Image 1 (cartoon, rainbow, N blue to C red):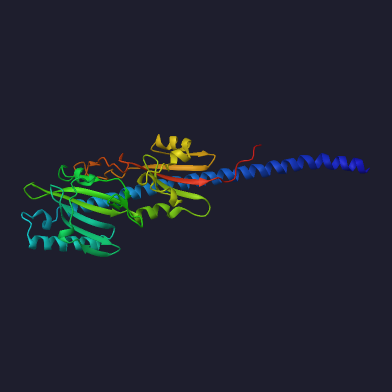
Image 2: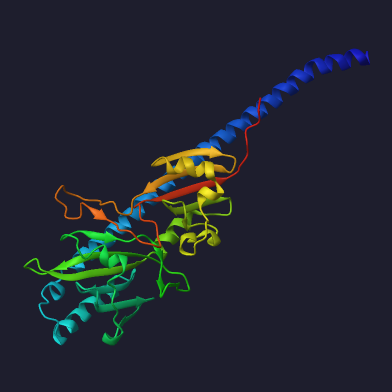
Length: 322
């Protein structure tokens, strides 16, 4: 009797247990698929919105530089006099006070000699003494902008600020934006160069990183990290160190470098990426004077005019094969 009961029990229990296991596996796999879909949607939204925010921020800086280059205190200067320089000092200091993201403002003459330099360091504005002004004729931001047409700007690649071939500490990421200065008779009066402190911009990039393994990254077009959750990976090109995404994740980098945007999965997790164009004009009319923004060759930085905003989610649960 007991054998018959046992046989009947197993006949009923085994199929039922198998159904329960299969249902559990199905529900688990469905949960994994749902999680993956949510992560892909979140990652895609993250990189797209982040990329557009970067472009808007840089476009606002370009507009600020174009505006500053046309103020009467600058364009009306025929001969450099004490009175005209005092007027420019006041105008530039006021600009610095109302635009804390700009760490330096320079006016450089057609030969590359600084005529005026305002420094804004953590809210403390200083005017460089005339005896300390330097010749910048060999700097890429001067050579890249001095021959430009009116209304055009030079946007230098993002890099760390350095002096005398030495990177300054603490690290300060910067972007220089330059435009030529003209008077009312279209005569050249050198160039205006504004240094943008990119610290806040990069901080916003990493704001989405959390303890669950999500990573926001910003790369230049050679795959060097401008922003990473691991600070040791950043700015490899400034120190001649081959720390690139391509060296660490060659297959992933090949896909990212070949497309403007996308998402994919590999053994390290889920990837979402969007190409960011820091030189792209967000013009509002066909005749916008800022419809072409160019960059020039720099010996220390990448200059192709695009970055990659990445979002990576590290490994999570995998589906169970059925």
